[in-house]
Length: 119
Picture (cartoon, helix red, strand yellow):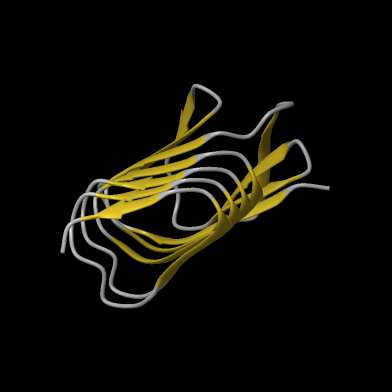
């Protein structure tokens, strides 16, 4: 079962999951169900996440994650990670590429994939 969690979404930030845009402080994808601030709002089959704005933490078991802004920490079990801004903490994925446009305050790790970031 795929579980993705997005915590501490900034006030002007939006989250797009599989082409649908959501606004909320905490978003969870459990299996194929999207939950925004505790309320079930949608169901889908694949999970690809795009965050436009800053976010405190993102965790995902599968699917690509893109953050167009800054992030505190980001972790994916399977999927590519792309952040256009800075990462204050760690970046980790088991299987996927990592591309960071800004600075990284913590460690960057992927078991199977490429890493590129501003130094």
